[in-house]
Length: 276
Length: 291
Image 1 (spheres, one colour):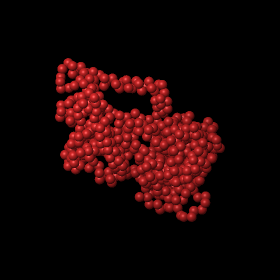
Image 2: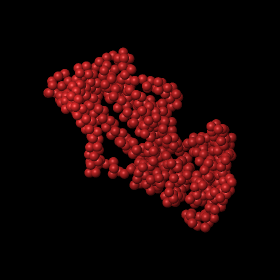
Image 3: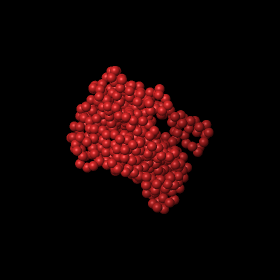
Image 4: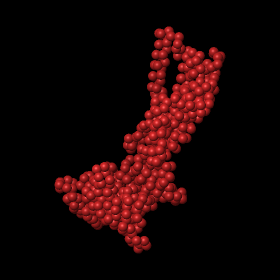
C-alpha cells in the first residue's frame, strides 16, 4: 500500500535525524467514503529531542504516532527511524499508550522483562536492566504486584519502564497522562523529564494540553484538523526545570493557545480542548 | 440438551484495587465468612428436604420414598450391611467408573476444544472453514447421538466416554473461541512493539488473555459432562452411576434413583469446586474472575 518515493539513501552520515517523516498522507476508508486523516506531513526529529505533537481531538496526531510506531501504514510518503523505513512495529520505537496496555497476567517485574525476554537477552542482563528501570520509575517495592493492584500513575510508570528496559531509544507517548488527575500528572511530568535527561532518549509526546506541551517540550509541533496538517513548529528554549507559574512560560502558553484556537473554526473563544 | 451458553462474563476492565487481606481465608474473619457462606448455602437444600418429607407424609404416597428412606438407602449403597442386595456397598465401584468416564470424556474435550478454539479464534481462514460446521453440529442433542455412538463404539464404556466428550466439547470450544476473539487488540500492539511477533504471540498473549473464558468453558464443560453421564451409561454398561439410576428405574427402586441423583449432584459440585480452585490460582491476576 505504501509506496515510499523518498526512502533514505544508505550509508547516512552520523548526526542525521533519528526520525524523518516525508510527505506522509493517511486516508481511511470509512463506510461513507474515504476520509483524509493526515495530509502531507513533514517532520524531522533529532536524536535526544523532546517533541510534543499538539492539537485538538481529531487532528490526526494519534494516527501519526501510530504510523511512526508501525501499527499503521501511511497511504503515501515515507517514515524512517534510524534511517530505516518503518513498515512494522519494532523495539527501537517504544509506545506508551494512554490506557497503559500492560499485560494483566504479568507482575510489574514480568511486564518490564517482557520485551528483553522475547528478544532473547541473557537472563542476568534482563535482571540487571529490570532492577535499573524499576528503581528509575520508583517501583521497586511494587515489583511483584499485578497491574490491577496499581493506581493509574503507577501503571503508566510500568509502561514507561517497559519500553526503556527494551532498549527503545525513541519513546512514542500517546497522551500518556491524559487519564490521570492533575497532581499525579504533575509528578509524572517531572519524573519523565528526569528519565529523559538521564537516558538521553528521544521522545515524541502527543497531547492536547498546551500547558503540558509548553512544560515538557524542546519543540512543539502544532497540528490542525480536517485533514491533519502541521500548522507550525515552535521552539521552546526555556530553561529546565520549568516552573508552570513563571511569566515566560505563561506568555508562551498564551501564544500557543491563540495559535491553536485560530484554527478551531468559527469560535475564537474556544480554549484548546482539554486545557485544565 | 439445550445448546450451551457461550457468553463468558467480560470484566468491566476497571482498575479495581484489590484488598489483599480479603483473599486470605485462613484468618479469623475468613473462617467466620466461610461458616456464614456454608450456612447461607444450606438454607434452600434444607427447606427442600423438609418440604419433600412433609409432602410424602401428607400424600402418603408409596411411589416416592421419604428423605429418611433415601438416607438409609444411601448408607447401604455406600457401605452395605442393611439390605444386602445387588446395590449394597457398590457405590465406590460405580462412582469410580463414572469418574473415569466423566473425566476421560472431559479431558478429551478439553485437549481438542481448547487448542482448536485458540486456532479458530485467531486464524480467520480456519474460522470461515469450521465455524458453520460447528454451529450446525452444536444443536444436535447428545441423546440423538446415542444410536450412532453405539454403532461406532459398541456397547460399553467407550460409547459413554464419547457422549460425555460431545457434551463437554462445545462449551469448551465456543468459550475458547470467544475468549480469543475478545482479546484487547492493544495487547497485541504492545507485544509487537516490544518485539514479540508471529507464533510467539499465541503463547505470550493469546493464551493468557483468553484464559478467563477458557476456564468458563471448562467449568461449563465439566458440568455438561456430569449431565451427560446418565445418558452415556444407558449404553449397556453394567457399572456407573448412570447405570445404577437406569437399573433403579427398571426395578422400581426409586430410592436408588434418588440416591444416584444426589450423588451425581454432589460429585458435580465437588468437581466444580476443584476447577474453581485451579481457576482462582491461574487467574489470580484478575480479581473479577475470582469466584
